[in-house]
Length: 152
Image 1 (cartoon, rainbow, N blue to C red):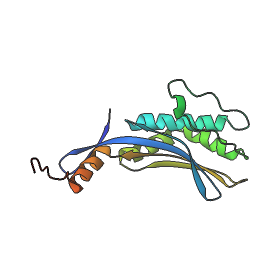
Image 2: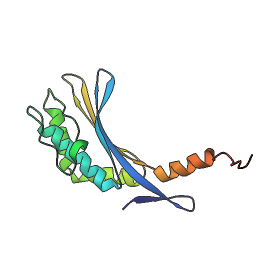
Image 3: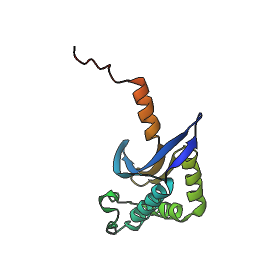
Image 4: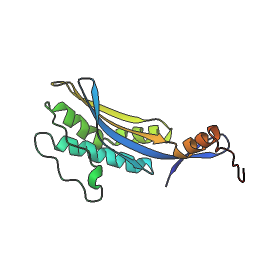
């Protein structure tokens, strides 16, 4: 099922993407990401990644789920204990999940950033809608195919 936003006379079909990045010393590195057809699946994936990262604090990360395979994020070593607790709290808070769901339904991104102040590590979990159909339509309207010249 795909979410639709009302447009000028037509509905725009949206797909959703999610990514987890880590920033250290001003340099952002991707830990993993996924594109899924609806916002519930994207938020489920983000919750799972938040819990995996939090549970990996001080020990090895749990194995990837067989149905997700290589799409689980790479591990992060936290030096303080506040960041993992913030990830757990976000993943378990129904109000935060509803707020993220509403933001995505409105066409806005949903973001969570946790900070490990001991080493300046920032982990950002984000999801946002991607209007693939609208982008393709706009791209083809702005760049029409060249005219065919047959038999010249």
